[in-house]
Length: 419
Image (tube, rainbow, N blue to C red; front, side, top):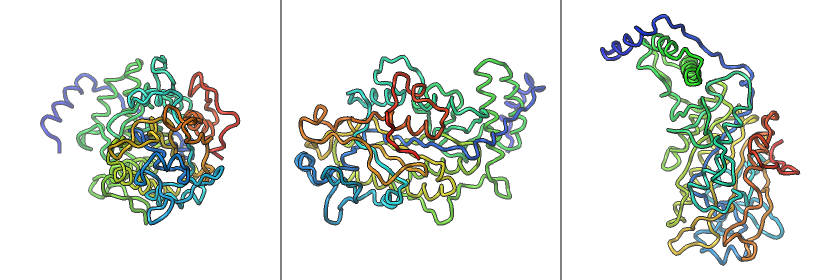
């Protein structure tokens, strides 16, 4: 419905830009079969030693109660991941939804990964990790996904990238056009459909200059306009809510519902064929200083079931989809006195995708003996940048590790994560 306020607002702007034309950007065809990279941030410092661990390691057993370890037997026994040097690595029982993906070689783990900086500060570690530096004082003022995005080339499509949520993570620091989207069905710039062409005409005219701000605004407006034409509608013109692939049911209970909604937003953007190649999703609350037994179990079950549903929902895109998890640091080997764990260092990363060489546990295991730890924590033997650089350079051969992460030398030989 056109209100008096809407009319006056439109009329006022129209007086200044009535002659402006409407331009549109058509999404490039090359994006239709382009790889899609989803970075899933597990903020808070996820406990990799409670996710995938050597259950028969005597140091592991000695430093944690059974409630904070991956079980090796009984009803809550973890499922087998790998056997290395006599160590029995298993995944937490609550990740059972991922077992089939691991056994079908779509899922892989990389252990003892992390930031090559000893910081145990959430803010500092995440800042360095998302900018791709090892020193907070480093002058690099862009995120590594921004640098990856700038090298993708092709048409300057508005939905080539998207941050799912209410804001942009530092991974996209410096990105000029990446939108933040909570629900694609709510992505709009106008009050109602009747006003849309008039508002587009007015706004394009208001930003007709060649300066960077005007250019970015026109791109954003064109993105919104093309997206508006892609979104499915009912007979009455109302936007149709997203429907997953037949037979797929995302978990809706807490806390899985939060992640399910974000992953469905990614799936919807991919299926709308708007050129999506890069997305981020946050799933935090992993800072378990107390009550970790039930908090971790609930969180990891939510992560696993939502990811499994998303993987099934994205069946038509699996061959070109890669999901990678990152977390600012792991947790200490020794539990605290509050039924939790404190900030640590080394952690585990998870990769899921069609190009992933799954069914394997990658990385060099440093051991958990006192002289093998880093100030009491799992040591980092694989720079997380080696993992994400290998993913990005394999998905997009035009990418270069030295450009993505200035000053970083890519692992040689490569880990072999991506086919």
